[in-house]
Image (cartoon, rainbow, N blue to C red; front, side):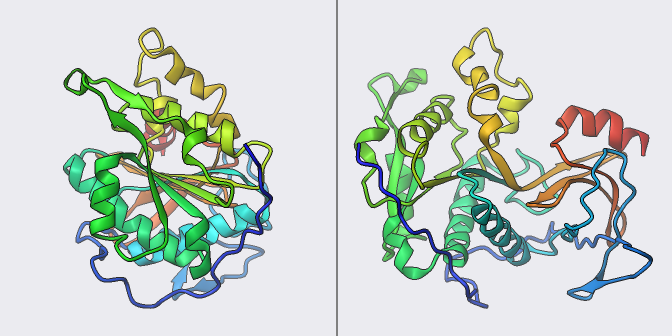
Length: 318
């Protein structure tokens, strides 16, 4: 394979109006603000006051301001775009974006699976329009789980665009038994490709294995970048897939995931002691407690905590 050294550029303007057919903020969205204080000087941003919360996790980078929790999906996508831009400047090659699509206070499963995937397609289109200059569409390859979803995207949200739409797996004769054929990534990638964006690779366990192949064969030792968009990687991190039955998938926690920078992340915890795990690169990981009309930061740290740690230790004791 011929490895190119593309000049990667990002868009510097954001269209104020959403594209036709894209999502608007859900009625489940919770308006949140972060409060922080630095040297007893209160600062404001977007008319939201925020203050640095007490650091219980050893995070001492005072040069990075905490980003306020987004008020709606328009603000969320702008935050994600800015986070990726900063990660690109820091030469990050493998990135993760993860957030709920059924409402900013929702959790996986709140929405029907196909609906959540469709919402992710809309979000991906809006995100790409914010991040990329128009001429970069031809050098951006977006991978969907399978070919049928590529056809759906071409007919709807991505119709008439120059983005290259591709797929990770294709059904086999034994599809009814859960078997799919992996697509050889070396045959899909083209020399002019600069950015890969992988859309929600979680429906079939083989999809993330193909993503690892894509990273190894087409990103490592090149200037290309790869973004995983709403891949629900917490399933792999938490051991949702038993190692005995899925050894290759479990191995990703030692091979692929440590190389990944989670640049934008929202995970909600429901219940009386609920809250939010939130991160916007290059800021710290923050655990937020929702109040009636705001989010209060109760803990922050540099490394990503496990969901179990957040639920049982941080939120439960706060």
